Image (tube, rainbow, N blue to C red):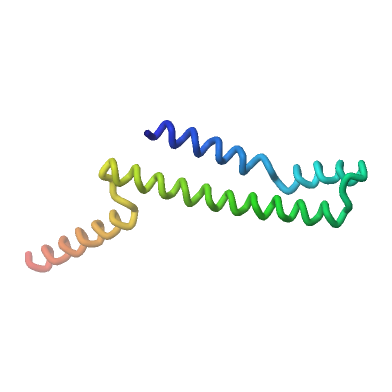
Length: 101
């Protein structure tokens, strides 16, 4: 169902967007100030969190693309590439017809 897909995509996106470099650095900075983490550990942690966030964003984009392709196929819609191919074929046929006229 499209509604279920949108709900899952929204929840996934919120999780990915919740951790930005800025928010991770602020949280880790507080940990360093309290002496619960060294600066080196903090830097590594932030880098790992940001890298994982980027991976999750890429996974989300791929997931969304796959779901849209499935929905397009289920609805019998064509892609931009298919539309462009049809447009070119029509233009070629029109040109051939004009040459014969």
